[in-house]
Image (cartoon, rainbow, N blue to C red; front, side, top):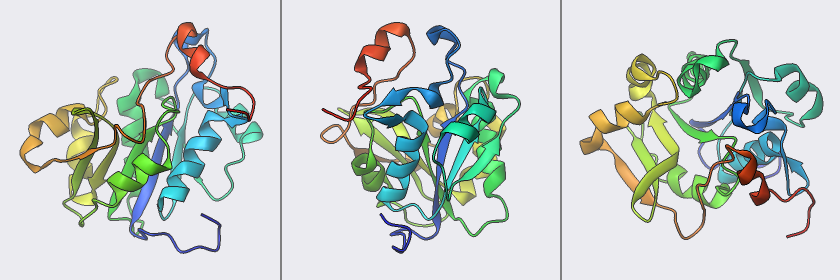
Amino acid sequence: MTPDDAPRHPRVAGLLLAAGGGRRLGGRPKALLRHDGGLLVERAALALREAGCARVHVVLGAGAEEVRAQAGLSGCVLVDNPRWGEGMGSSLRAGLRSLVGTDARGVLVSLVDQPGIGHEAYARVLDAFAGETSLVSATYDGRRNHPVLLGSAHWAGVAAVARGDQGAREYLRQHSAELRLVECGDVADPYDIDTGADLGRLRPGGAH
């Protein structure tokens, strides 16, 4: 999507959680890992825009100043989470707070350390948006994973239970009857970059 293109979903924002410190990667901020010739944070933010999100909010924590200096995130809203060490839940809460007062009625939540999930999966989940009460999760061979789409009616409830590294998981469990599942296993692979062994999945250059 070029900057001049109208977003396919003008009332849905992208929310990229990119605050992780990479403790099991020797303290290397995950946002600054390289993959296919770009930084993970750049590639994920671009994929959210390409999928049709109206705006992209990026939550930063570990190495925030380095990310600001090195990453090409023009047009994104950068959100600082000084409590990033508490886990993903704190970043999700910070990201949701940053959307309060905007015209967003939904948010597509993604993680910076899942480079196998790109714009095709994001777009598929995004297309399931049906207003403020929307609650949608991608699945991979039937197993829930990211991205997750949260209508604004759910934001306060999600923030209330987002603790540690659980994110929205407990809220989705509590509201499973309302949750729409969208299979994405044919277009994406939800592996995480968590340990040194996982770094082999990254392609530093631009060639496939």
